Image (cartoon, rainbow, N blue to C red; front, top):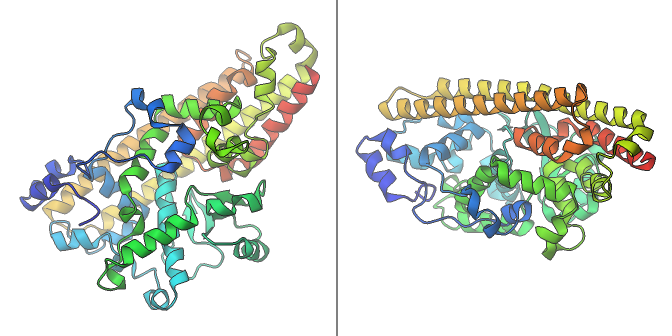
Length: 429
């Protein structure tokens, strides 16, 4: 099976040593970092010291995969090799995908590929992705942290504009080639997936299928390890802190994305914090202008901007509280998906091992979110009681928010308010 290439995994699995098998790496060879990782976190040598990029285990891979759509395991016995192999084919999604339509329309198939690849990318960033139980949902394709999104991977922006006209309140994810057409649009989010990558994944995987139902879920064929290692980096304190600092201090173009030109900072800022983050390069020209002029902690200058400082602090508190509230919602989504997963697993020794692994990783995610929640509460309290000036800890605050996995669609207005209050403070000092 293409999804799990490690021979040791299969040797353990076929002997019934399931727990040992799930500890094996998905791939024996060292995975390559993908382009999206390079865009966000810089060249590979910048991350060598963190040790963040390592091959994921088969257990984590299976857990991450089935948690995108827990219903795919219904009636499946992991003890049977053919069942485990078929888990990663289109046949497992036949209940939600109109395969007759896909067979007759290559564009429909490519759209399905784009949705699967985007789901993998978003989950790697810590978002909770859900697919609808039926394929006839007007205006949206996936739920991201509870928010409906349309997914468009197109050669031109016409289809996106048509969606926005018909469903003005449903945001849309677009391929990176379309980003310039919608810069600053609050309802358009940009994925790290290109049109070319979707076409290549579709062509490569369908050419190896005996029929359409043997079509492997494309992001696996495209290289699951690179996507999931992005997940590793996303949760690594050193690397994500550096990525956010590069954005807010306007060093991204020079340090990380020099090869992409002057708009590099906006590209990364949009990926991290959504359209509102990209409007001004996620505070570039605000935090950067103040800090480089040595004005952040000048007590004399701050004395003349007390009102603006208080308003900025309140804006940052509001942003933090909004994200904190969304963390509780994320946990509810995780619990619901976990319950659905456990409810669909049949009784077998292999399924018990998979369920045990899922419970363990679910518990780890709960602890992680709880820790991030407490971190944001601590930052908020420190701003509220006046022990710190909000702008002084802007990079720390935004890095903490990014690591929660709360989708930026939920706090766009709050980011805009922080940006506005930062500009007003700058004018005063």
